[in-house]
Image 1 (cartoon, rainbow, N blue to C red):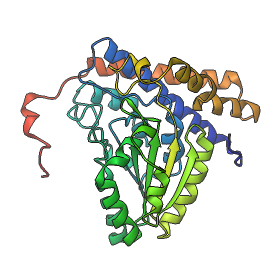
Image 2: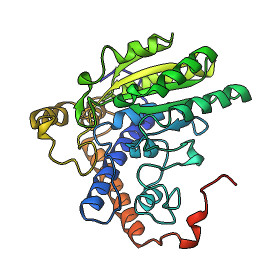
Image 3: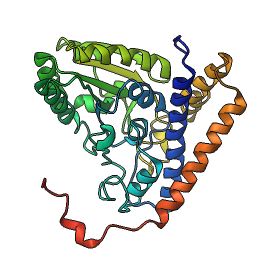
Image 4: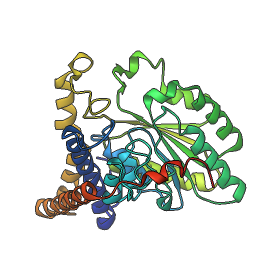
Length: 325
């Protein structure tokens, strides 16, 4: 665990946010398995330190763009359980009135420009957001989350070129979880991913994506520099997804071993690692953290129950929000 100056309130908030993401995903998975949730979804469990470490370094005025595996980004940027579960279940009280679903949640009030089901689809949106900030003289920063598989998209190279030429305040955050759908990253990505960003003159870093303090410390430094006009930047965050590519991907033995999954869960889990750090540093006791976990689980259960009973949007809305007003 990276060393950093202790800040009890901040550290407990980061721990709580990681637990909130894990708890949300556990409940979303159960909703899918019990046939109460339509469509597919892509679990973020295992990658919590990435979303929390980065979003904790941002303000509400800073923007993010997310991915099809985006629940963690949404929660880390301030989304509430009730509206999130309503969106997953297609209910009118969801963030997009139930029309976006799992892969298209947006929360403008917290600077979340939206998740995107298209691989790499939000790269242009994030870069456009950073250009807007520069043209308007704003000091807000945009973070673009995407997976290692998205580095094969030509759009990334186009926007990196633009961002580097115009020194845009954008941070490209690549969540390298080791697999692009069902294929190991090293089998589809030649060479170094960080070197690809460096080829455009973009300062690039690789960090342990299971260490929330290391992620947060690096991101804070880069965000501060981006605000001063020193961007763009690139971070490759080495992490791991516990579930399959999507909730229906349950027989993973043909492309990754159970021993590998067990090693990551037992020895590299971001929540377990940070919890041990909090206890060893005297920031919290096991009882404190157990109580916090229980409170979050209660909040999630209440939100699920609420969402299950919430109303669907009226059929008359089908043509709304299709085009800009």
